[in-house]
Length: 197
Image 1: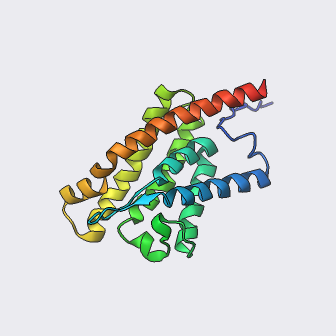
Image 2: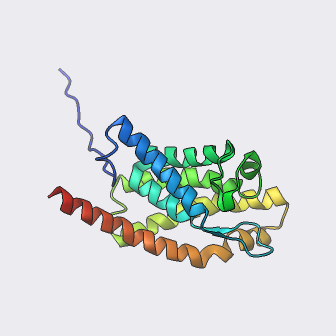
Image 3: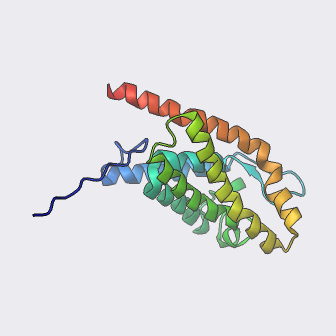
C-alpha cells in the first residue's frame, strides 16, 4: 500500500486571502491596478527613450505578495490590458505599439520577474530585509536583462547607448525602490503574524 507524501505548503503574503476564486481575482486585478497606478508616476526627461516610473516597485511587490502563479497572472493582466487599449502604461500610453516598441522588453520582464520573485517569496526570501533586498535586485536584473537588449534592437542603437539610457540612468531610483520594498514586505509579514495570534 502506497503512502502519499505531503509536500510543504508554499506560503506567500496574501495566501490566506487567495484561497478562493473570488479572492484570487480580487488580488490579481488589484495588483495589476496598482501597477497601472504606479506607471502614472512617470517622468521622461527630453532625449530619454524610456520614462522613469514607479512600475518596477509595483512589480516587485506583486510577485512577493501574490506568489509565483498569481504574481505572473497579475502582471500578464496588466500588460494585456495595456495592449487591449486601457491607458495603463507610463503616461497613459496603451496599444500594441507600446508592446512592440522600445519598452516592450521591460513589459515582458515585468511578467517574468513577478513569477521569479513570487517563486522565491514562497520559499521565504521576503521575510527579512537581508533576504528581500537580493531577491528584489534579482527581479530588477531580469527586467533590465530583457528590457535593455530589446531597447537596443528596437531602436537600432549601440550597446553602450542602450545600457546607459535603458538602465544606468535609472539605477539611483531603483536602489530606493529596492530598499523600500525590502523593508515593506518583512514589515507586512510581521503585521500578518501579529494579526494571526
